[in-house]
Amino acid sequence: MLLEAHDLGYRYSGKHPWLLRHVSFSIEPGETVGLVGPSGCGKSTLARLLAGYERPQEGRVTLGGQPLPKSGYRPVQLVFQHPEKAVNPRWTMKRTLGEGGEPDPSLLADLGIEAAWLERWPNELSGGELQRFCVARALGPQTRMLIADEMTTMLDAITQAQIWQAVMERARRQRMGVLVISHEHRLVERLCSRIIELGGDRA
Ligand code: ADP
Ligand code: MG
Image (cartoon, rainbow, N blue to C red):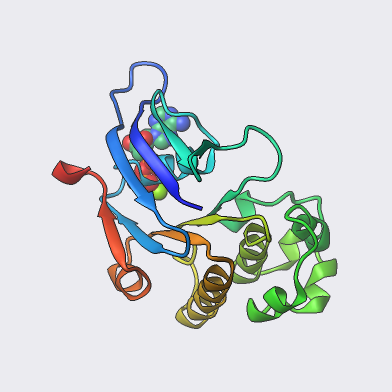
């Protein structure tokens, strides 16, 4: 489904100035787009607006021409840099995965998730292993759009490549849009057909 940002404006409450202003773009189903910009320009904030975790003060986000659903499964899924902040430490990995619906065994295999890890607790996995679970959870059958906010920044090159290969394969099959937010220009250029620059004069 087409994801559209219509003239978004966002400022944190209090005395903060506008962080995002007049931000408009769209991402087609099956399209992979990069989002780059200097640190602090609002990329992660924009990611949260696109996934529906925050509401913009100006403009709107639509998916397939409709506002994002207010409850239930989020069709725009967000994966960010630190997986340990995205999981409940008191849930086993099996339960964590269950949040996104029944996991598809072939997806788990593509992501290199071993069956034995399902019984573990988050603190019994490495950062890279934990991130694979966060990616698997985000790639449920109802996901229309994945926002990867520095998703593989902390990982070694081999793990990074394996995760991206699984994500791109799934995105192609589900005609899912992907927004790649990363400061690694080589990664963005390799994966994306188009790049949006945020911050500076071109916001
Ligand atoms: P980026 O991901 O591009 O580095 P962020 O969206 O994380 O940028 O942050 C953009 C700006 O908003 C930064 O100056 C940051 O300090 C500020 N910011 C982030 N979260 C909050 C918050 N909850 N309250 C106030 N300011 C915030
Ligand atoms: Mg950020």
